[in-house]
Length: 406
Image 1 (cartoon, rainbow, N blue to C red):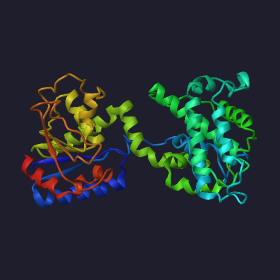
Image 2 (cartoon, helix red, strand yellow):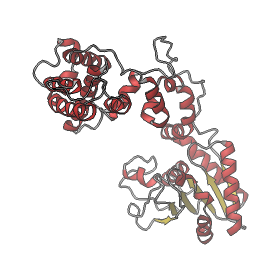
Image 3 (cartoon, helix red, strand yellow):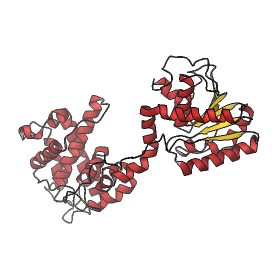
Image 4 (cartoon, helix red, strand yellow):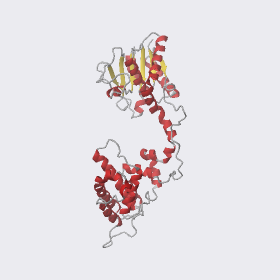
């Protein structure tokens, strides 16, 4: 009798594995009732767990000055400004009414147009008056201040002329200018990572620019607390920057831990998982001397590949990887069992690699291991990330296995 050892992927724990195991058992029963399915659950002993109760987490912020729910949070605002330097200007455009004293008056210059002219003037020498207290940020973004000032000035006139002029207008313009200058600097440098910016230097520069524009730095634009709070739900960047998430970091990390933690633990303690797979194969072989197949998903496929590449075949007649990253890790030289450029050992069994093109975690190995792997494409008709977990509900997978299993 052929034994199929089912190895799960990252993030799976006992209840989830039991459900997947039963699903695979039903799928095989429809096409190959003569096959015996053997469990290989490793999430309990080889997966990642906070064994010490999360003592590595920083203590929750007890600062009474920290903003609460619904209050304006400067860091959340800067998270948004880094993505869109015009965010506050757009808020004023959408939310502020027309100037009650507006309309055409001979000789009168609209206050927003006047602010735009002052912003253009910031490109002239001296926008960073304040000496060393402004830190290295001025040196970094100084070459881009002129271009940033011209763009912000144009947006102020285009969007806000005729609008009611708020008491925070100068600080709004200063923040937009700094955010845009940082973005332009990163583009000019073709930076591979964000420009290092100290928050204290940034705030000091905003204060200096606000002062030169003739205003006082009153902080976030008035009434923006609800505006920011409404965006926390929809915007993942703002959500991650909010105090609510920072105080709930332990709970959030706990939800992410199984998936990411299992991967990290395998990189450091992979021998544990490989030994667990080898044990399941040995038990299957001892129970019945028929062919043994490894059916392995995602991280389980990586560990199975490493096991078979590092040591003799362990009595495995066929390896079936599903949604596997093993070919990708080989290409970037990140596999434990086989270095990039090395060939598969002669003891490596026949290998079938199942993937869906919509699964962003499924890779192919045909060009990496010519003649040693059969890449089999399935069409799950699911978007990612569901495409990575839908393989074992797909009838086409079991139809293919029916033809391939010994």
